[in-house]
Image: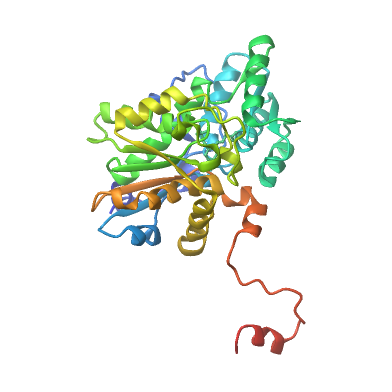
Amino acid sequence: MSPLLRQWGRAAAPSPADWPGLIEAYRSWLPVSEATPVITLREGATPLIPAPAVAARIGRGVTVHLKYDGLNPTGSFKDRGMTMAISKAKEAGCEAVICASTGNTSAAAAAYARRGGLRAFVLIPDGYVAQGKLAQALVYGAEVLAIRGNFDRALSIVQEMAASYPVTLVNSVNPYRLQGQKTAAFEVVDALGRAPDWLCIPMGNAGNISAYWMGFQEYARAGRCSSLPRMMGFQASGSAPLVQGSTVEHPETIATAIRIGNPVNREKALAARAESGGAFLDVTDEEIIAAYKLLGGEEGVFCEPASAASVAGLLKRAEEVPSGATVVCVLTGNGLKDPDCAIANNDAAFHTDLEPTLPVVAGVMGF
Ligand code: F0G
């Protein structure tokens, strides 16, 4: 039983209403003060879900858990970074924020900025943002600029904008983003009572892998865990600059969230790999979709394609996982973000246009 479950066994079960959001929960670990106005949607405290069907494909006593960050308020891990980035932007007196995004950052930036009373400008690659994410940015009240170019081009424009105009950049080059995101590593250790042996994670701009590594290291230094995980980073084959070791000019993948050819956190991610004895690997779109279907159809966990890259990568390297190891795969975003992908990629029996009668329904069911 995990330490958290043991603790809850003794007292009354905590109500989700008690969770104050990650800044209050991890205040002493974060660069905030009494002067920081905390902008929160009670993000964090996402579940670590056992994945027996994934583990069964590896065997040898390996256990696999899914850190399901798709259950954050805007449906992705970006909320962890955005509660910090927007709170600190507001503390500094800023009135507008800007980001480039493949979709999730724009949703989170819009939600937190508007909640904090700031304007939110988001640049997205026209035609390459999943419908759910675009819908969110619009409903949360962002000012959306779709450019005829990819994420990397959008990021270089917003970096120049933030250098020249009074708008604060909230992409993961903003150091407060990674500070917020490192709390996911704290939660993993708090739930397991130890660090995992392997941490499998998708990489795009490579901010999240860097944040997790920072979190694990800080917890280890403070004696909260006695070991550190190997950081296993996965990219889609059509956009794998960190695996290839060079920028990809025209990144392509079904996992549009990680369709990035020139990651800004390259150096930090390479350091995480070197210091943790980790590895980077690419997974094909076919492998990503196979893992996506396995997670949905056998684990009951619906994630977006980019998130499934962590499980696809784990299964691709299954032979290297030590017997008895504890593995955590990070599921960065909710499957509802990308309904088009879901409808186009499933093996479900979907019977349409049926006569509304009992014999027809019973017949289709095989009775
Ligand atoms: N998974 C999802 C669902 C993402 O949205 C992203 C990045 C990643 C993984 C990769 O994380 O960039 O820290 O390595 N999405 C960004 C965005 C780029 O604009 O929403 P990373």
